[in-house]
Amino acid sequence: MTPAAYVHLDLDAARHNLAQVRCYAPNACIMAVIKANAYGHGIERVASALQNADGFAVARVDEGVKLRRAGFTQPITVLQGFVCTDELRLLLQQQLAAVVHTPQQIAMLQQHVGPGQLSIWLKMDTGMNRLGFKGADFNAAYQALLACAAVQQPIHLITHFANADDLLDDKTRRQIDWFNEAVKDYPGERSIANSAGIMGWPTLSVGNRIDWVRPGLMLYGCSPFAGKTGADFGLKPVMSLHSRLIAVKDIAVGETVGYSGTWLCQAPTRLGVVSIGYGDGYHRHAASGTPVLVNGKRVPLIGRVSMDMITVDLGSQPEARPGDPVVLWGDGLAVEEVALHADTIPYTLLCGITQRVAIIDDHHG
Ligand SMILES: *Cc1c(COP(=O)(O)O)cnc(C)c1O
Image 1: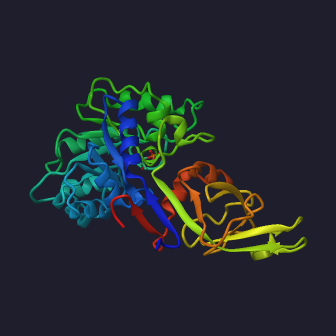
Image 2: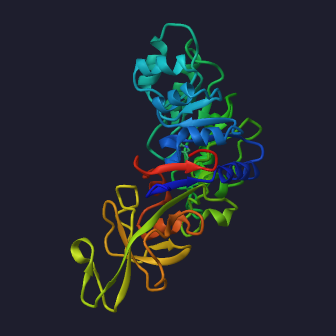
Image 3: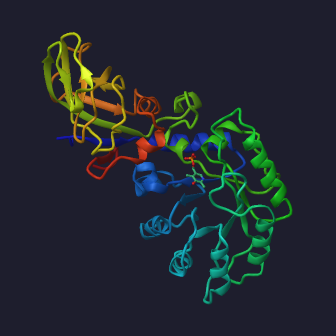
């Protein structure tokens, strides 16, 4: 018996997408970004599937510790670094690398006594205005860390794009130039590009230093560019979200469907009820008209998404029955397309899968 709602993972697709990253960035090392439970796919499963990556990146210390406890020995970078000395000790103990982006972190490193040295990525803020040091502060931070016994040398260098998904915005070019200029005399490895940078800005130049690209979304088979899907870039979707019809009924003209009666029946309609809702991570803002696959064919969602169910118009499929299979996104229906109808981006849909959704892949469960 299959579960009511489940995610199927195609881990071969994940390996294929990793190989695509190598084609886009043949001279770079790959830090596979598997934060947020690998964008909803399950961090341990994805880490196991992507053993060929040169390292992993996570957002927070606990995510890195989880990987170490699961036995992963690759380089792992914690993109937010640490915020207290307890976290600093954990990073050292578990041999996790950390992004350093605040004066407080530098002070903690200077005061640290004890064995071991922390591998660090010093972050430059090149215009994202989230994490990192700017201008002269960046160079001062570098000098301070150079003199710090708790820091492993060389210090690696990192920045993050703000608008790389907009190919017409030359802010990305300015970010690249500013970063390269600031780090040109430093020996450490460099890391700039996320998925949009890898796919959209292939002329990224980091000179002859080792560069680490940081793909997240593209590993899961998706495009960060509006109006494009992963398939346009040779990527394959990893996640498919499945459920099934649980009821079929006919609705008369003048009836409304679902909470608040947002959908009004204007012609006799065969309606299907699907066991999926925002309690599973199917976005509540998916509007009437959002495509859903019933028995592999597209039908439109109608009415509001509720916690455990959605309703669809089965007009094109009068033979559909309770128990018939439904795909909300994945193979045959790009999550990017669903995201457009839900007024969001594929990232939030993938990350939003909730605990009650069973995750299965070809090898387990
Ligand atoms: C999440 C993240 C990435 C990966 O971004 P994608 O757009 O998913 O490729 C890369 N670098 C940093 C610093 C991040 O926070």
